[in-house]
Image (cartoon, rainbow, N blue to C red):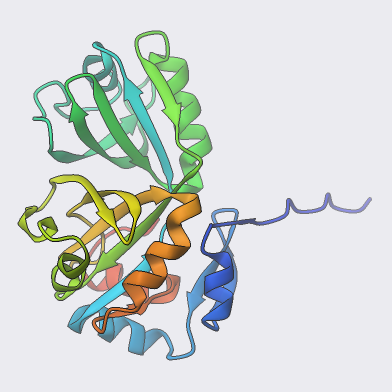
Length: 242
């Protein structure tokens, strides 16, 4: 009896750009993702440590929790304070099952008193969102954002490069964020990341992701970085892989 055919890989909104830039593509979390570009893993790793690297993390899951009870409802799923998180601030959290075991880690941002923006890991996003919907969907709106891409600009020169395009973004401090227009794109920017460097994560409509990425890559500090260097950077910084 033959094995069932594997599901076709999904692609991010930047798939064509990765191929144009000569990336070697590999399966990751159900997506075709760039593992490295022609310069190679070591060059990408060092460039991120010395200047700024652009990562496509659009495989991650993004969602909104909306309603007057959203913060209290979300706090019922995590061992961290959600209710008292100020508007404009971001926090790291752990999504728990009914027995208190850890399902996944995530980031969440208080957009308004009645709105929370959440980013969950790509490999777990379907289960994470289903768990959140099942546990608190009757207390607030759980709104997945499949039409949003996510880019990460990481490195000691990330702020210099991004501030050139979005003046004022350099005033954000770690784990804060806000809305910015960058190259005509509607972006939600947080000062955060996962490489052990200063940096930003940028949520942008999928239809605008290519324009944003090309604009960022046109900055002299910025080069594209693949999964290989992302993982080596995280390991070097003592961070978990996802």
